[in-house]
Image 1 (cartoon, rainbow, N blue to C red):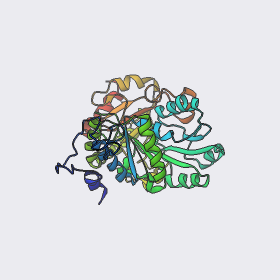
Image 2 (tube, rainbow, N blue to C red):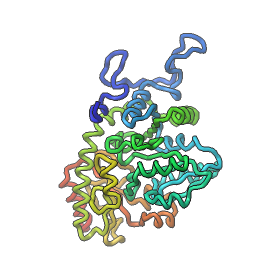
Image 3 (cartoon, rainbow, N blue to C red):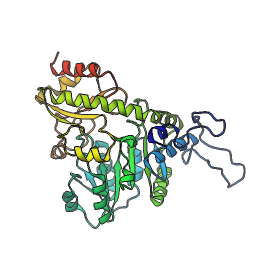
Image 4 (cartoon, rainbow, N blue to C red):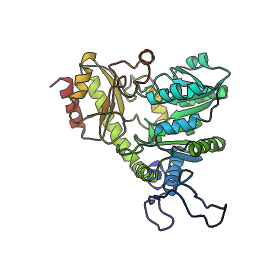
Length: 379
């Protein structure tokens, strides 16, 4: 089954009881047990729910995992995944990871005994310089948030295996439609399902999957024990959203490519980050390991002082956190999504105060370009 078909018919795609072409919303907290101590497939909805199971099976199939897990947010998915490590363990993170991931690592896990080092994960020599006997995993984002750095997954995995490390990939920006890290050797994949998987800015969710049975058992244990599971209503919404992921991603990246070219040609813009540009660092790697270049663009204005007035004067594009919805969303990472990262760390990684991140939606491209132009000109 090809991927576009699998998005619609993969996993548990219909109700086996009635034949309904959409899995029902099983809005229940518990299930009748016919015999004492002998529950059926489901006993309590924190541990398992038929609607959530349908979503989890679909996610696992799309990413090539043995089992999927759905959580109440992307950070809940990362939290459960990082819970497999123990006090004294050390992790290597990319230097421009999502601010929420940094905050979770720095403010929650670090006090519990985990340590971490942030480096430019594209550089194997940088990884080599920070690996220790306590290092257990490499946590990557590619494309990264917000600078759209491209990391060669196969190359990174090969290095990680040499050091007996797990490789965890946040695949939120690419989605399984454009990139499949497990097939490239990664051990665990996580997503903020809030973003492209849901696609309509109407839910908050996270998912994780792995192709390793032992890791799946561990993640499943922490999913149930910590309890940050996705409810049946949002599981149903996310399952529905994934069905149109293919057509949406095609529209997102078509618009993003045009917006990136438009910004490159505009004298009021000083720098553009988009993997589809031939001069973007990692362009060739992205072309090799992805089916397309995605819908995210970042850029800097020639006059950084105009950033606030620029984003506030947009009319079609919405100033808001998050990304991946059908509507275009714009934000300033240093003030919004990455504000939890100290300024000195942000600047070392290249996240300037004036950096702008644009999630290109699927609106008419001329409306988007006109909106950007009028805001750039300060009209």
